Image 1 (tube, rainbow, N blue to C red):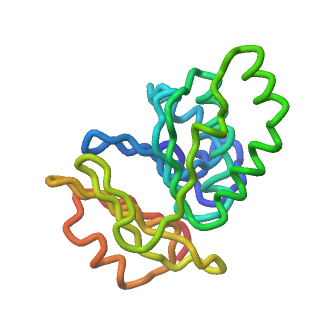
Image 2 (image 1 turned 90 degrees about the vertical axis):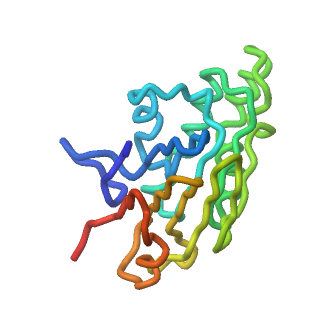
Length: 194
C-alpha cells in the first residue's frame, strides 16, 4: 500500500492519496496513481522503468492525478517497453491532455536524449465489468461499486490458480462486494466515513 489517504488534499503528517503495487502470478500491477505514487514505488525498491501495467479504479483525482507524471518519470528513468493502462472511459482524454501539456519536453528529450516516443509506449484501455484482463497466470475482473456521483467506478479481483486478492475501490456499502470477494486471501478495503 503506497498511499492510503482518502481525498486529494494532503496535510502535515498524513499519508499520501491512494496507490498500491500488486505482484502476483508473475505480473506486477500498479493500482491507482494518487499523488506520491512515483516516490512510493521508488521507496519500495521498484524500478520505474520496469512498469508495464496500471489500473485506475475511477476518475477522482486522488486515484489518477499522478498517472501522467509517473509514466513520464518512468520514461526519463529509461522506460522503453509498452505500458498498458486500464481504467474507466475518459481516461484516454486525460492521457492525451497530459501528453499535450508535456509536448515540448517530450519532443526535446526525444531529439536531445534519443528517447523513444512516450505516446507510442502507452496504450489506454477501458475496463468493463466481468473479466477484462488475462495475462499469464493472472485473471483480473471488475464490478461496479457505489461511489456517487461517479458511475464508472470499480472493485477489482485478481486471481491466479492459488491466490485471490480483491480491492474494494472507493465505495459505499453494496452487497455484491461480499460475493465478489468471497474466499479472497486478501481484501484491500477502503474505510473512511461511517
